[in-house]
Each structure stands twice: as structure tokens, then as C-alpha cells.
Image 1 (cartoon, rainbow, N blue to C red):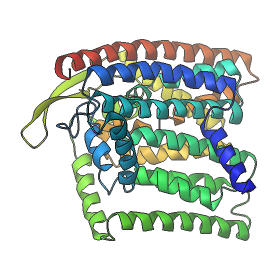
Image 2 (cartoon, rainbow, N blue to C red; image 1 turned 180 degrees about the vertical axis):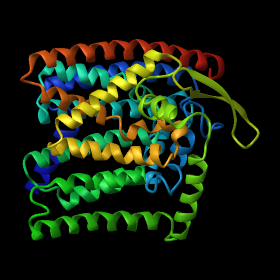
Image 3 (cartoon, helix red, strand yellow; image 1 turned 135 degrees about the horizontal axis):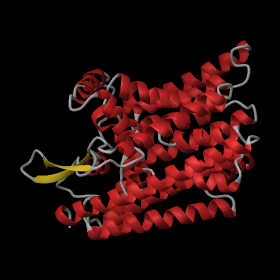
Image 4 (spheres, helix red, strand yellow; image 1 turned 45 degrees about the horizontal axis):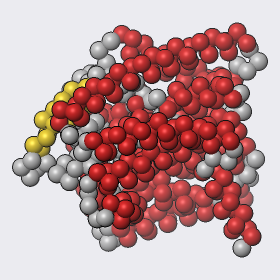
Length: 425
């Protein structure tokens, strides 16, 4: 019992703030996001409207996700997770899907994203070991990302995926720093939760295992790693098949349908979709466009989508940020922590940019990868910790990017509120 108690305490210390500085970070973000989410939930119906299953804003499927967890081929175990979310929210709201129901959904998202900020801050402080002011600058930068802002009040798979991926990457980094292996129980739990919410993220759970010490030099360690991975996969597959009553043939047919639906959209050039949506839209809001939608049952409503960037400054922001990320990768090429982050990001690039799955709305997938940006920026600063001139240049660049990001995203959020005022009161 003492071992279980110790592990539970360590888990709670990792997930929740464990110092006054971390608590201050959590309280700051939960206050900012909480005010935003509370106002939207109480004054507008966009967070949850029983008549609107999908696409009210930026192609998120709020109602469909809350009620069913989403399609089983992409979100195999999300059904169970969102059952708890829905029933808890209904319990508090007295069984009604009214403003109180929306408020609970918004606050659960708010807590998740605020805890995500704590995880990234912990990584910057404890793994990269950046000075406090640098860590705070980077976490403020990350907190102003469009993905962070939108997911802070959005009840979606991406919201909780971002939190779980942040927790797992920090946990794996701790294990690798101590030169310890990731236990099979941790791999299994991460596989079920992360892969269960979005199946493609299952691969990311196993990336850190490849970087365990001497894993390819010692057959015993290699065999143990294979066993842990196979155990996690077996548990995941069993629960997945149980979820669909072992009708495994439905998985391939549904997956093919989804790929055809979301990969053959010809709207703007691929390079522009990559910069404006995948790399950019998940961080820096572009302008918005209003579209006509319907719920397939006779109810028409308005949806909000992102447009490609229309200003040179927006493209320069994204390109500059990508240069910094690539610079960080090259500077820290031999760092296994950086390789883990890069491989995780590469996996999303392959799916969305090379295979073109959902490229035309790839800004919604930011919850799968945006946490990589602040961490790689942190490693870039770490790489030049003994070079004052380069460090000063990076600091000035970061401050300029942060000011532009904050001004742009605040301005675009005013457009978002104009949309809510007009169509979702």
C-alpha cells in the first residue's frame, strides 16, 4: 500500500501545481481563461446547442463529441470519457442543457488547458532548467496561441488530448533524465487515454521508449521494451474491439471513408494551407469567414471558418517561428528530448501536410502538436545559455513575436465575439 500511495502522490505532484510559482501560473491562466469561458457560456449558446452537432466554429464538433465522444474509428474510447463529462455536467445543471450545462463544460476545458500550461511550465523549469523569467515569457507566449484560447472553453477531444500529451511528455522526460525505463503500466495507461481519445496519437506514446538508455545495445532491455509496447497495444486493441462489439471490419471501411472525405479538398494551394492553417492557424489567428451550415434535419445555422493569411506580417510571423523551431532542432540534434518532440511533430506533419488529411481545416488539430513549439523554443534558449549576445537576440525576437501574437489574437477574438453577438445569443 505504501508503494501505491507514493506513486499516487508523485502523480498528483506531477499533474497539479507543486510549488508557489506553479500555483501562480495555474491561477493566472484559470482566471484569464475562466473569465473568457464563463462569459461565452452564460451569454451565448455556441459552446453547446442541441440543434448544432458540428461546425459552429472552426469545424469543432462540440455537441457530437459531448454526446457520443465522436466517431469510433478516430476516437475509439472517447465515448466512455465524454460519458463522464456529460453526466457530471448534467448532474450539476439539473439535467438541462442550458447555460449552467455550458458553463460546466467550459470550466472543465478551462481547467484542462490551465493544467496544460502548468505541465509546459514544469518542463521548461525542471527539465530544460530555464531561468524563471524565460520560462514565464515562453508560457505566456504559448498561452496566447489560438489553439490554447479556443480550447480553453471548447468541450472537444483536442482539449483533453493536449493536456494528456503534455503530461506524458513531461513524465517521459523525467524518466529519461533519470535514465529509467517507462513502466509498462504507464505505457498502457498513456496508450488507452491518449490513443483512446485520438487513435493516431497512440504512436506518440511509444516514441520515448526508443530513446531509453542502451535499448538497442542490450537484448534484455530491448526485449523488455518490446514486451511493454506489445502489452500496451494489446490492452488498447482489446478495449477498442470491445467498444465496437468486435466488428473489426467496420474500422477499415470507416477509416477509408474519413480519409477520402478529409483529404481531397481543393480550396487553396497546399503550401498556403500548410502555412495558414497547420503551422499558423493553430497559433496565430487569420481572418474569419462566415459560412452557411445545416444539421441535416432542417435547421440552418451560421458557421465560422478561418481564411488563409492576408497580410505579409502574418506569414513572416509563422516563417520566423518555424525558423526558430528548426534552429532549435539543429542546435540540439544530439539531445534525445528534442528528438522525441521532433518525431512527435513530424508524425503530425506527415498525416496532415504530406497525406493531406484534414489539411483544409488543420488548425483544429493544434491540440495534437502545439505543445512542441514552446518546448523547442525552450531548448533553443538552453542551447545558447552561455552566449549572451545570441541569447539577447533570441529574447528580443521572442518579445516581438509575443507582442504581435497578443495584439493579433485579441483583435481576432473581437471578430469572434461579433459573430457570437449576431448569430448565437
